[in-house]
Length: 167
Image (cartoon, rainbow, N blue to C red; front, top):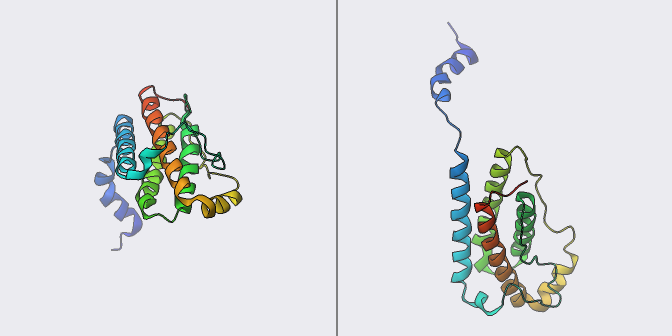
């Protein structure tokens, strides 16, 4: 006698019924740990210490600065912009940081989903036409400023996560 999909489902049912949702506190803790990891990776890149995240650098105004109050959607938008900038840089220093930002954005989406406010996927900058010319003119400066400002933004996000940010 052939059982088919129904028997297969019934056979898997005991295993499926024991799957539990990940506690939101665990997701929040993982998010904070990943932020600290990214900040450590940025600190390990020696030349990022030379520029303050609050300094204004002509031509690099498209790189987000530090924001005092961040919602989950604003965090995601900011990370999307940084991720887009970092993937445009040819430096090998930023590849892992860019991958970590993708994972961080996934965790932020889980946090938002847990608050019943799913975030649309932010795409970063609408236009990066000027980024190509900026990269040609000042590749090193772009990397230093982007990483410095990213570090400041991540530290602000870490503080905001303790305050349970809104959507």
